[in-house]
Length: 580
Image (cartoon, rainbow, N blue to C red; front, top):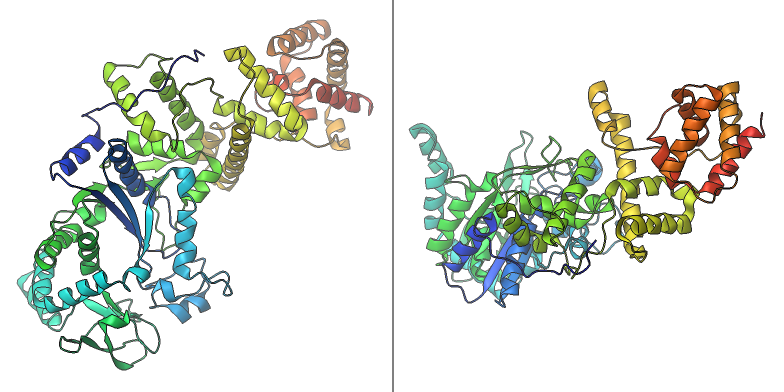
């Protein structure tokens, strides 16, 4: 591989969807670019959050490289209340804490931990940021609500309560019949856009038996004394608190525009459910403009990031977390999928397609460094644009080598017999043959081997648990999987016939003087054995599969044996022959 191919500076590519966002931001002539996204920590936070995080991260990086002041904030809505708990949370725990803000609920797995429920799950997400290449400041809303700025936004929202009600009602009643609209307006007559954390039970809402939510809503705001009067629906306590107490929280429809205003947010991506015309995002924008006097951010709607054919839901326990993904793959794979795909199209992450994902990444990489021809000039320009965004951290100046994902997965499964030095030797042998070099990053290889091992385990579980025979077969075809048996058992010996013992004995004699086995050498020996002993190839293959894997079939024998240590092969055959 030509090592003189050097990294390029990021190229402007107006056809990429990111550029339309950059152009819209630029049209506002901002002095500083403030990006935001948010998540309620109701449980293990699933992969879906990564789409909006990585969209913001790309915008942050683009503006940062231009030398433009840019800040990216993730709001973890720790003051949101628990409406429900995922299935992995015990029912006793759930019953005790339902209706309380997540920031006031203890760690569900370790009550002695000083972390709250919100912090436990929020930090779990934040811990992936370094590897994912995400540079976001975390804003915990339970801390934000203690600030002077947020308290002032609460006061403004309550003072303009009639305007807030009018705006919200106009959006919510658009599709209602006249009778439904009248009922809604009647029900909302005493509605106020803030809730109180009960001084007695810490709840901000109660979930009724029919599943409806009764918020601990402010009943009256006394402007002169800055007090909010409430009656807790959860415990029945009557109380009054000042906004200064930090116990008053805005309804989510006002909470969103209040945060936009405080931080001058210019862009916030959001899922398609929020971004439908006349939906919650549009409501928020009008509230932002008319209640708080701020234009509001640019709306970037995105489709779901799915796990196969399933939508993920944090609160319902349908999760595949970023940390789980990073156990099996590198961040650049996820970044590639997101930056290659327009936000208006959904992304289905399929674990079984990991080899395809890596092959595509390496193709993009070769094109970027000028080592492979693109399919078109447009593809070349797009790759020059997205490759620097795909790489989580520093972009390598040159591309010295690539190790195929399949090679890594085979090494990972041979690690028990090759050991660390054998793995290093096999990798050097591959790189010398393909690129004429022997030096490589051993730490990087070990990381890849660990991730590949985890992926193989996950694939094994997927295949074993699949009930549909056709799907099981299709999944099995996506992976070369095998397991070297630790020792030869009497059961293995009993499955070998006399012809196969002779096959092994003949092969053993032919490799006595060999120090290394190549695919070509193995092929030649097998052909000679077939002709000398007049046996079918299937019998030959089955003999070796049995003593290596304990099965009569496996991956292509030549490449597999070429990856093995020749001394291990000799010892294994010798141990079998000694049992005859």
